[in-house]
Amino acid sequence: MPSTPAPVPKPLLPSASHTEAARQLDELLADLGHTQSKLAAAGQGAGVPTESSLDNMLDSLTRDLQELGIVAAPAGICASCRKPIAGKVLTALGKTWHPEHFTCARCGQELDKGPFFEQGGRAFCEEDYHQAFSPRCAYCAGPIREKVLTALDQTWHPEHFFCAHCGKVFGDEGFLERNGKPYCHQDFLAMFAPKCQGCERPVIDNYLSALQGVWHAECFVCTECLTGFTGGSFFELEGRPYCELHFHQRQGTICHGCGRPVSGRCITAAGRRYHPEHFICSYCLGRLHKGTFCERGDKMYCQPCHDKLFL
Picture 1 (cartoon, rainbow, N blue to C red):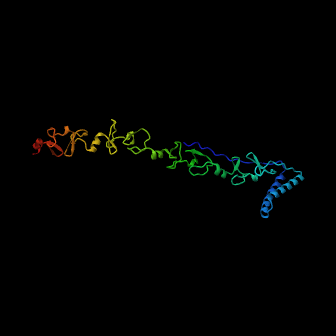
Picture 2 (picture 1 turned 30 degrees about the horizontal axis):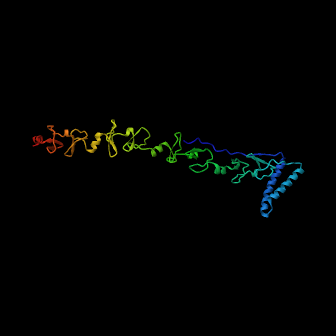
């Protein structure tokens, strides 16, 4: 049976907090951020060391703020660049970050404005987290982002765990396994259960074995008259069961005199079989002996009776 689907980890949200510095400080630092971008572009074209220019600008800004009577106390050390955080600070994973430095460990996307996932102390965007760490569906091989269903030592999207033959999702009745694949009860029995030699339907219980096959108890009857074998014995002909009478009828071993099976000594005459005691004259009922009888129609006569009646 599949296990109860379990939810995957929920995304986390970073928290942003402000220092005690004046509002002007945030505005100035925002301007600094824009200036940093300009410096980076200029540095790439003119060979100006961006880090040095940025540090000089920060020192100059700090002196200007001090002259205005504003002392900017660092809010912490950025876990990424290891530099003091003088403006907006973002707290996540038990650390502080410059907002622009809190990024996905795989693709580098900034994570300061949306949810993220944590793995091994590192932050990931939703897509990269699922691609890298979520369990894979055994059917589609895609990452499982929500409920996980575990069965057959594998994980599945709940909607992808269905009968390998008919494609129906399993209900409360569960599933049956064959060669590592799940099947609904109906298809499993139809495909893999032994078939009754009488009706060819699956045999589940209350069966018997005979003639190198299995049978429903109610299906093991005489092939000719469909009567059960109350005595427990039967006769086999071409792989099918027969009662004694119909077996001998099929074999041509029925006494022409009494209509009962001939199982011991018999007399064969005119293409018919007889119990020795039933091979008699049809007129006088005297026992006949081979070579001393006459046939008229389908009846046997002794020579005297035949001559008397027909000559």
